Length: 421
Ligand code: GDP
Ligand code: IMO
Ligand code: MG
Image (cartoon, rainbow, N blue to C red):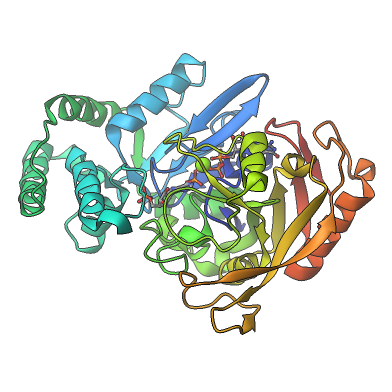
């Protein structure tokens, strides 16, 4: 069996949670491979809305196995809140959620370090989610991390040593005005809470499941433009959000990857700081934000909005090896006279390029193709045959430019508002 990977192609929040939930009935296993509680994956069904942060979006559908892989960073206190909330709504997790012992723990002091580094960057700050993601991955890479498996033995001792090291760094950054007594207490409760879950060596588990003929869907977090190698560095997250991250974040060989589903919105958004070539600062951008409810699921911040960027998308399709595209939030563009798609960048020296350059920070202007809008409500449509002609033209144009089929079109937040082609 092969593993299918589903990931975001833009700056996150493309609608990954919704699609994973829709596709889950076709898989035996859903696994997260990177990121942590910086993610906010929204699912809506039967009039209920859920936002998942660290728990895979396969958790709502039957007794699928859900795995948190070694590539994930886990905050025990936030995880406990999230899991308890799900239990309260009737979705017990204990036997269905397996957690890699190699996943790294986000400590309270990692969150302080996140804030301290942001403060030190001043106007160049990344605009992180403040969840301690960067400092935790930094500790992992510099071989200083604390892992889920560490909670099983001499944990207090290990924790104290890591905390002391962090306190020294915080002092060197003049970041000393904090009191984590309460947070730490809850964090330790979270550690105890974690122990009731099956703590696994996820690479053995995933490969065994594949050998047993089980199908696996990997759920990406963030998006390709936030990838630490290929995104708009340094305004990125600290993990590999691209398809290769599924190999390293779960322990799967590249030859085991099957389909790669690339998720994109019919337009584009970004939250936090950093370059965004097609960003709209006018009432069109405000209109997209209002209709699309473009506010962060984790921080509530306004999402910046703009037209779809095909230059960036082609690049994302390339680095991920995307085989199938999924277009979300098409209904948000229902009321526009015309829609635009960026097909090239004009650089500050006047040259025009149609490939994603080394750096998109300086003076890039988008070159647009403008198409008539469809001016029709898509949200109640249930089959492709009902699509208005102008919307079909938009899809055809995107498929031709991106040289990849769009296999699913989402026309609303609900599970049911999903059209397969
Ligand atoms: P994720 O992080 O990629 O899972 O995406 P988020 O959950 O952060 O953001 C996507 C938002 O769009 C959520 O509020 C979803 O409920 C909503 N959504 C998803 N698909 C659609 C759609 O097709 N139309 C509309 N109007 N909303 C959608
Ligand atoms: P999902 O999975 C959108 C952004 C932050 C910030 C940058 C670095 O819901 O798509 P971090 O806290 O990771 O160090 O922040 O990345 N960011 C996201 N933006 N969706 C996300 O996740 C994000 N996770 C992080 O806003 O700009
Ligand atoms: Mg999100």
